[in-house]
Image 1 (cartoon, rainbow, N blue to C red):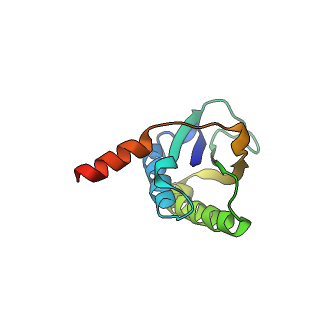
Image 2: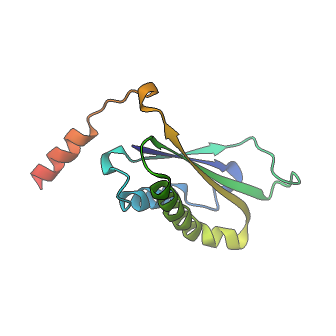
Length: 132
């Protein structure tokens, strides 16, 4: 289970395709062995109230938080963090060239004893494969 939460400043709404950014993160995560496909969740939240650096409204931000079940080694997490960050940087490159944007990413573990889970996505993915 990796959950990707993208928070972004509202002034980027017309400058960055956030749906495309979510798709980029999902596709990159799906190619990383440590992330099980059925557990990948990517969502983006626009933030309308913020203050950055000198307070100029031209500055924007994209902040990515990755939460995942504990148990992976630091090397595995560092590799996954690097791959996701590089993919997002590449996706945002056109926006970086034209805008003042801060990009940040943080990965953290979730304690499985304090985070119960249930769902039927795996069942539906298996059914879709059988239908193919």
